[in-house]
Image (cartoon, rainbow, N blue to C red; front, side, top):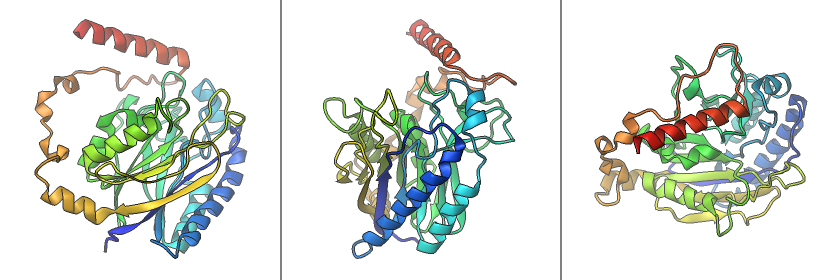
Length: 335
């Protein structure tokens, strides 16, 4: 039976930049502690059933090649850390959207994915691999770029707290990603993010807030967005402003952490029943139903190339820059 109204906790972290996978366990210790704080501390109010952590909570793609990431930071999924999240989710009867892991999968030798998992009382419910790395700097793999990749790019988990779909940070700058999750049935859109200054939660470039609200209203979906809160001292040359938030299906900000670095927990309501009601009865402002997909030839032409991963070849910043330049040239030629 679906629980139609509950609270979500978006929890931002402030860990030092990781150098090695040996640092992950201590981070998980703290995140389990924070999750328990949120669930137990807010229990007299609307119960917390969903806990969301930010991108880079376990590890960040700080090295310039996939080879170095594999040597120092990658882990398989599932792993000992996902098992610990599972134990807490089972104990507290909650769902946890993990911070990202740098994942290595033997099914795709040499590839490194930036991956978040939804983990509930029964274990891993879904695994999302970032489709849009923050290029040119991020040199992990997009599953879109792998030849013959056949897994669902935008999985949605059907759970007792609604249909949940996640995407990671830069993915949210592409409306198509969240539209596809909504088309796949997502009622709650989860943002696992490390969205840095100056594009964060404060004017004049508060892209973080603007984008979260737009993706909610254009997809008639709730948004739970956890942003990284690491200071410049921990992740030079970047700092993150936090501002983690919960947004309703009309784009109203229901709760938001005060912008600024540091660990913070923000809790707000998620109303899956309202989403279902609005999707069922609206005629106006129902952009999912009004989508004239045939009207947009831009989506029938390739831009950034898929399937370009070469066997035995690692990604690099230089290769990313070259592919971006080629995509720009194609746009100019078509224009």
